[in-house]
Image (tube, rainbow, N blue to C red; front, side):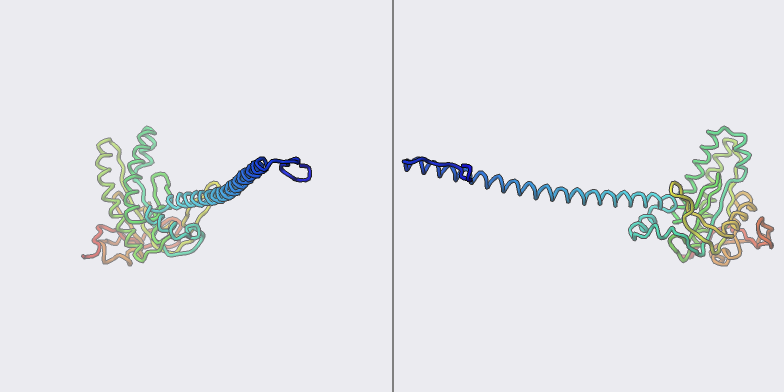
Length: 286
């Protein structure tokens, strides 16, 4: 047995005893082979399970990254545009700093500062919620890019991050739709003794665009005089008035009813800037 044998018989041995011992050894060998086979099978299954776990971990990591990327894009873009960018796989690249011609819409409420000084905070937040919800529907419908909220001010950009040839048309069409939508809210606000108006400024020009900020907090920004131009036109606009720059009017003149306002002295601009009021959106004839 010490030499490696599994069993032995002493002489003289009986033939039946020998056969019984051999059969016992064969059963042990068959059992050993079964155990070995099952062990190898379990090892293979364990290896396959480990590979599946690694693949699942990578899939989950990729999906989490995609959700985070989608979340960043949905902060600025309508859902259908964000979906398109994520599907293309270049959403982060599209938000890197670049230069492009854009149309910028700046709008805010007239009389909001005075209203906020006298109204209860809950009333102010209620009005802002109604206002943002109302305008948000139009931003999404016209596929604009929400750049930022500035209190009661809203900045919307067209032609970035996804280019569109008719970006100025979309901007002016959205502005007219916003004015009509706010008219309905203005009537309800007047019944609550909230004296609020709504004005819009629109400008077109080149700007540097991209993500600004730091790792924990980043925003999408449009840097350039075109944003200031839209903001200054908005400041000059009376309630229900849409003021546009010369370049904006040139792009949509046949699509709107407009009247010249004259040259305006705008803060931050060294020379007077021509401005026009969009009285009515006509659109393209079908």
